[in-house]
Image (cartoon, helix red, strand yellow):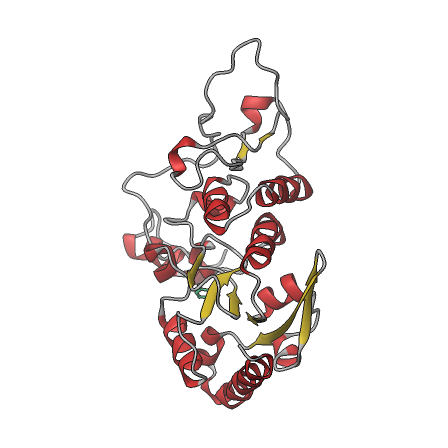
Length: 295
Ligand code: URA
């Protein structure tokens, strides 16, 4: 280190705050610091010796008394246990996806699915999120908009697309005669990535079975994927969103097939207002498709 690189030690509070801001740490989520390198205490009740041991790392489909909705029906509760409690290695992304898939498939209504998502412990984002953010609008609506992940406002309020980009999305929808009565809005991730960073592949895979099941239960007639992550996850697009936007794709899964269009994400439009012309073209395409389908 030369003289010009030398820094004061210990750093000032301002230096520390600037370091956190650059690292994407933009808010405090608790009064006390938490050492996340330590395994959390198991939340499972003590097992009796006669109780048959479940899969040692994932306990699924146990009834959850505290959830209130759909009692008596198959509610999936997936608990990831820390390695210290099981002697096992952490679960692979494929195992977590498998657990999410079983939990999602056990749900036959949207309230059941919402409860299962809230009970799921397989996505690391949950540890730093304030709320689980699932959907807003009308689940019976013909149009389903699926974005990326909750941001700060969504995390605080527990609803998707309620911040600045959500307000722009609402204005775009209003321009084609759509609102919360005839639109259903969700995300491919149900917890906020800290500092709004890009989601990891593991985080996307952990949530994917739930958004797929939400689509299956809501049965929209048309889907719009806002942003590259939603389009890549649900439509398998590999090109950038500026290439895939505005073109009809097909969301196909488990025998269902729904016309789907990638859209420029409203947050991108806020940063690049010059591309609103393209966004308007895509909204008109959506409106034309809905009209053509008579919905
Ligand atoms: N961006 C998203 O993709 N989803 C939200 O809910 C909010 C912002």
